[in-house]
Length: 67
Image (cartoon, rainbow, N blue to C red; front, top):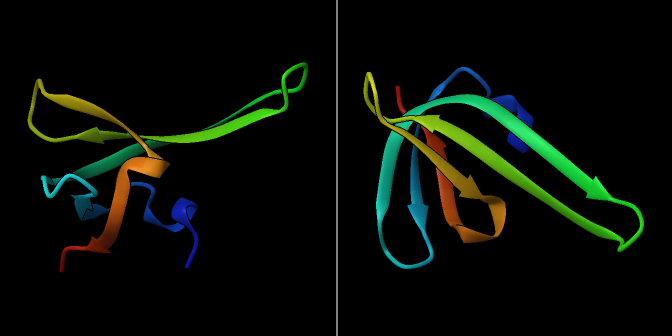
């Protein structure tokens, strides 16, 4: 299962620092800067009605869909 499969799903993410984030994945953004060969992926998570989190993929320890 790829990270794009979690788009628009309710997920529980455990970060490498031990913090848990629960919410709906509203955007998976892949960025590539060709001049510097930098590539990274971020998830935009809607935690609450007015609360959003931007999480870099390298911060994630585990991710799973909430049933």
